[in-house]
Length: 510
Image (cartoon, rainbow, N blue to C red):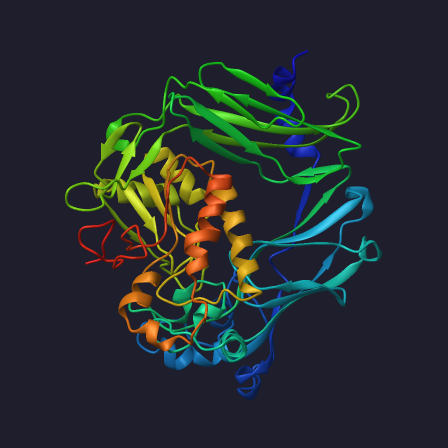
């Protein structure tokens, strides 16, 4: 039997049975002030209400220790929170080996510098809210009851420590140097929001498996000059080449079936139907499906190990920045036709992180306004798949900033490695979404360096982020999402030799 037919028949079986994800329970958590200003205020250990584990501000509010954040007194009432070391803790049962020979703890988001400790064993330090944490569980802890602790360092104290170690760099507002933390910059205060840095986490799970585990697959498209499109799958995971093989299957909307044997990860096609923005017609009938299946032996049916699926759609998006008799243009070409982009910035709307949106309803309102593009602004955070799925379905293009805004950023370690890992993770994660129209390096960083007097405030030879926007980030896009354009910053003139806000070159902030 052909592998494509087998893959279609058993895909559900693969997803349901061969990788076990056991959620860390949401109740039973406590929070403790372990150092800093919170200790001097007499804040000890308190229980966390169910569903409030994503933010220390929400936990304090629900425990009645602090009033909910409000726009009038938020900074005065909450500043001590950012100068306190915190620990989140929960007693739990670690899965036995019967649920998988291998087991890892994965936490989707850790907002702040944090040591993860399980049963008294340190699983590692984590310093970025923009990549998940994952660590293997030691065999001696399997099938035991243990205490999971997330030991956070005070976010304000931590950035001040890095500033002292690596040298001061100017940032927007000049209150705290948020450039020394890979967390949403706006939590440290912005012109539209209060200054309330905190810590938090979300989505903690145990993942168990036996012989193979495939991570979410990345799907990229590259359009060729002859009008064809090359689809590439990036398959990663815990895969022993001596024991398993990986087969990739791709099904097209018109009944196409492609089988990519072990080691092959790309095909070239000539699609009949393309994904379109909402103003240009329907997106029905252009959905593709990719599967990656790990198996062993001669019979794939009997030797299933693991599998992943991903839906995607094909579209051809270009950013036209060609020169003319005025200067350098800036327009989007979608499936060969210019498009006038209309939209707005998207910024985080609630600081405690507990509000769950219906993203389809939200983006329907956005589209009803007449917008066809949304910009995920660089001072906030990368959005969940539900947000991009809604944009895919409704035909709204996404201008995606990397998370940099209005600051000069250190290129020293560990930050250079953190940014490279963030770029790799986020570009791979989002590359399958057809709504992705632009990767942009960040917001007003080059502009600030050029225009706000920051050149003169930096020490000679001091790094400020240029390497990220001109090298690290575009390299990640070229490697994992070559079908989506990259633009170094916003605003940007297309050249470091011109003022980034030049009215005749590139995009402009007014």
